[in-house]
Amino acid sequence: MSTGTNDVREIARSAMKDALGKGAKEAAAIVSRTRNVTVEWRDGKVEKINEATTRRLTLQLYVAVIGTLLLHIATGRRVSKYSLFWVDCVLRGQASVAEMEAGLARRERERELERARLARKKAAAKQPA
Image 1 (cartoon, helix red, strand yellow):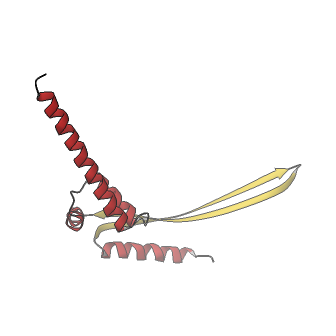
Image 2 (image 1 turned 45 degrees about the vertical axis):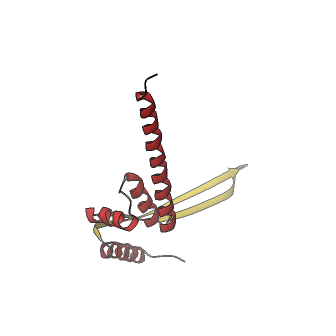
Image 3 (image 1 turned 60 degrees about the vertical axis):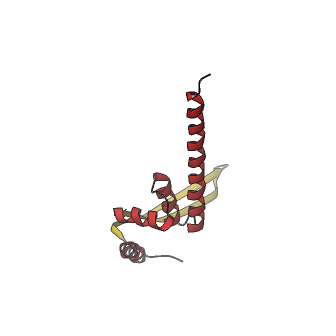
């Protein structure tokens, strides 16, 4: 099933409109198409021809600071690069919200254990030998 250039542009426009409607301050869409052809020869004759065409739609979104506040309110956790990484995974469809919440909880437990370990180490260093 072939998608014409106008159809791809319409998909890009629709994706940008959806992103803006869901809170992005600005959005940009990049549509690209890559075509690769491979020809294999054996004994002076064409043995195999492969052709692959890839179409890609990339959305670049600018989300205001309010987005980080909403993330904090929704998850109850502080916003960090790690939490923004998970949000990016969810937006790309690479993870579910449940996986994001589990990952953030796991990271928070790891940080608490590390803080407790450092506190024990510091207390041990203060005790006279």
